Image (cartoon, rainbow, N blue to C red; front, top):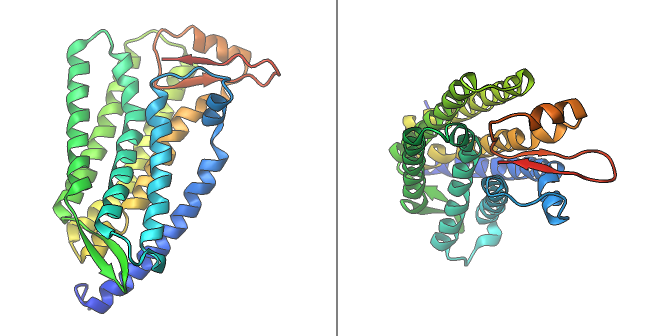
Length: 285
């Protein structure tokens, strides 16, 4: 039977974690490059900036930054670096990316239920609670050096478990309120079906991605295994959340555009970019 607390085993786990980080860095860089239409449209001023686009863009940038940092910190090139300060920056970027990922979904029910102040207050409180968990993980950690490098973060396994469980519940709450709100709101069949499929798909992917880090942190095998699947889960959640926003770029036909314009329900971030040379971009907030 494996002794997970053995220093040699922890060192091997740390080496495996380093390779996992580099693998998912490559995956996310590939995803970022192939899905930067919104950022490019904003830079080229083809669409006007809207505040709901902030969590989408911020989350993607912060996650990419955190992945580059963790890959660098776990490599031998990080010798002589102030590890605690560097991991503090990484922790802020990574956890803020998780928060932005969930906000991409939560902004939808917040806008759909705009006529019900008590629902919006409840959503604000739920969001504040989520960021309280994120902030706790950001600052409540220690650094475990491995072979002269910064190594990895050591976080209380109960804190990690609570964070991922709360994130799952938070996303499922957003899905439930979105579906309930759309059922009670006149809307086109195509758009309701699209939002329903996207919401179910996103929460399903997020739940599956979060189950593994929840189980691993609950087992508390060692300090490395407690956090080994946290970044992959964050990347999967961010990709799924970003796909919800960018998927509206595919609704380019005139019939779909007319149905979208007729909707009375604002979306998190919805863009319609025609394929003609004259670009008439719309963003419904």
